[in-house]
Image 1 (cartoon, rainbow over the protein chains, first blue to last red):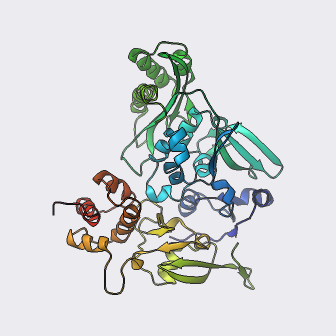
Image 2: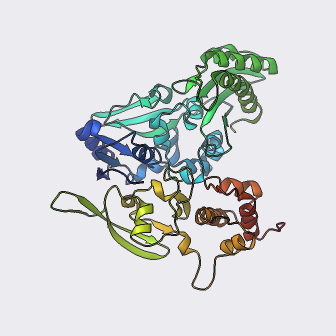
Image 3: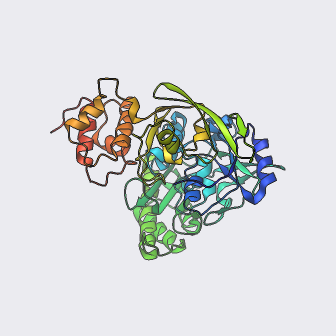
Length: 289
Length: 168
């Protein structure tokens, strides 16, 4: 399988990358790990005349803690960089936990965090746990930069609010009160399978009471989706198994799954109900896992 | 960025240099040349197989800085500056690598097409985790598909290569 011709640039700065993207507009595509862009080009879903590679932007590979800001994950950190990050293992093991459920080892050694976000498939495994932990993204464009809640980045299947000249440079997990978080996914196989449905939950528990909860569902709507009614229902209530089961039912009502060859919408709703209950329980009992 | 040569028709070629199996290589590649095609067609390293060519099957697995990646999803121009191991790099002149020996001993081949990728995934695992559990072995080769359904013997061979007792 061969790729069509294209022009290739590997700029040495983010500014230069944004300039190139701005100059070539719709003809250009940003490439990072290549595990989505090259597959789409091979499948003839994408035929960019120009590829702008950010492989030289070493500063985008960091995973670090910045006091007052939070945990900063560079957009070019690879999935396996998350899986084996000591910092994340200490602070939010739920992020490596989600990263490890993605694809398989070879893809996790190439694919990047930023790529997983901007590819914007509804079944992406990283955004739910990141959104559950209130992640924001830093975006740099030809005309300036901005920060945005990660959940506001997605506008539909395979689409984001990013302008053609904009690049996500980092994901920031702010310091938080959440005492636990986790991501649970159901795929048709244990590896190399997209989520049929997934649920990430983050909880703030004090004295057996749910002070706050964030529930994010994947593969059951056009974008990663918050289950806000289930979240509101939980707030301030004493934690019981019945309460969590009821939150699961509410999340299942809120999600908007489709029938496709992987599963029926009805089955996906059932998965959301069960996984919401289970992921809440796990986050409550085991912390960030 | 790699040096660029532009011919009179405006086609660009990029000078890349990388290390493969301990040897320094330099080559001129087009932007759209895939690493798997470059090493097979230009360097005659045909042990690396082309399978699905979409990053699903693992036949084209090579080690990049010691980590398994799919060579079908790597632009040759992006190989610049990196160090690789392919299946040809494991054996020395007269001696196979221990993992290769164990694959033979345990009959971990049927058609053999997935074997180079399987063996490299196993090497990367054993380098970072010398005594893996069976679960860890299965996880490490989860990106390497065998369509002859030979996983059981592959797992045994890898466990045996780690020095663990395995039922033959």
